Amino acid sequence: MKLQEDKPCHLEISEYFIDHIQSGVFRENEKLPSENELCLQFKVNRHVVRQALARLTNLGWITPFQGRGCYVNPIQRPIQYVLSSNTRFSDNMKHLGIEHQSELISWEKGLPTEVEQKNLFLTNNQAIYRLEILRLINRQPLSITTTVMPEEEVPNLESCLENFSSLYRILSDNYQVRPIRSRSIFQATLPMLKDAKILEIPENIPIIQIESIMNHPGGNPIEYSIARIRGDMHKCLVEF
Amino acid sequence: MKLQEDKPCHLEISEYFIDHIQSGVFRENEKLPSENELCLQFKVNRHVVRQALARLTNLGWITPFQGRGCYVNPIQRPIQYVLSSNTRFSDNMKHLGIEHQSELISWEKGLPTEVEQKNLFLTNNQAIYRLEILRLINRQPLSITTTVMPEEEVPNLESCLENFSSLYRILSDNYQVRPIRSRSIFQATLPMLKDAKILEIPENIPIIQIESIMNHPGGNPIEYSIARIRGDMHKCLVEF
DNA sequence: TAGTGGTCTAGACCACTAT
DNA sequence: TAGTGGTCTAGACCACTAC
Image 1 (cartoon, rainbow over the protein chains, first blue to last red):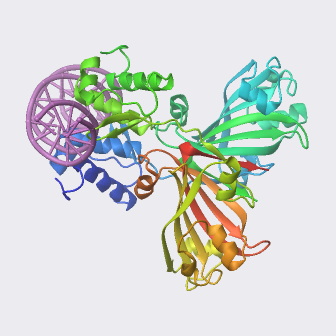
Image 2: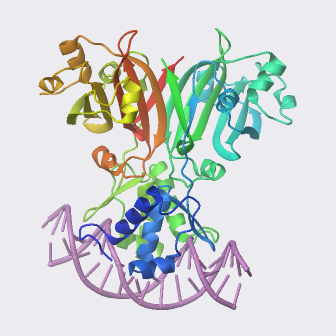
């Protein structure tokens, strides 16, 4: 095909689709023509078409399904999450009127890593609980959070984990504790393969990682967490 | 080759290199064997090798140079930037003892977009200055920031833009203004092609986008900015 | 000039989905 | 069974870098 001389053909084709998706010619969840049809349409080899489709996949525009075809990804309007010393996930979502759930993926009782010791002021023989929590909005995976708490703050936590719905409900109902956010560290990264699968995104779609310390009101740290949140679904507002 | 039956060959090869880079067998800035050598080594077609190298490139492990070879990317330890109501880029870097520069890429005087009007409390006929600023640390591009200010706040700004070194120096020296950060919005995204080139990263390495409003002390907004920062070089700490 | 990565063609077989 | 995307081979030519 070669519309321009200076750009390689597979780039021309991927730019063509980016333009047409952005301008609405291809709508979300619409099926693209098959690879063979695109070969005929652009008069190039299948390998070139596949290079173009690979770029579109990597940039998050389409998702290929073996045996079915390539489909245009829904455009996400990121929800705006307000982060302050006392905002919580469910409060935020309730305020926005968004359907949401939390699921406990796994938990363990063990000893803290060096980083965890440092952040929670622990020694290496003080036991901790480590929880993996998946959060969903509108039935779609939004984030995975690893949360670490000293055992002495939440003794016998396992007995509260049946029918998990909200960590903060457990803490306030069973331990009369309401943690306060002390600091957060933001970083844009790529997901680990394991997280990408759970979040249902390709491995090179960015996530925002938020590492936080929660304290007792006016006191010592009680919770250290690392949240990995889909970048395309979420933005985070901080007031100063 | 096919070490395992369940994984495709190009994935095996890319995993092989990720392991060997992580474990230090291949060190940063080291040259990988050429594509033809890898074909012999793994006993596969060049196309398969190229698929593996493409994944390594996309995930930020290597950079290919036409005519020279593929080189292992230096591992970045992200610097920790402290964001508060009154921290500035140069203050932060000075405090960390890191060499840094700011460059004015371009500027223009014009009318505000709708978003800019909303954020700066302007009408569509009040002129604004729009600046593109590149920041570097250790001579490496770190971020690009688009900064918008009402003309009435900084009249005749163009006369101050010769020998640009720091926006906040200009504001304090020429206008006796010291803006205060009012709010910031964090989002993880992929860079625009234009930004990726300036930041010298492939187009699918994540950036963190920070959209901020700066106010007069206790007063109206004076500056609206959108910073796009390399995710692998930077993390941002907020205290509550 | 030799070696490197970038682009592209032609064709084969497989795994999965829809019918 | 037909159509789809996933994997892989074999070979060609080009643009760029180092020598």
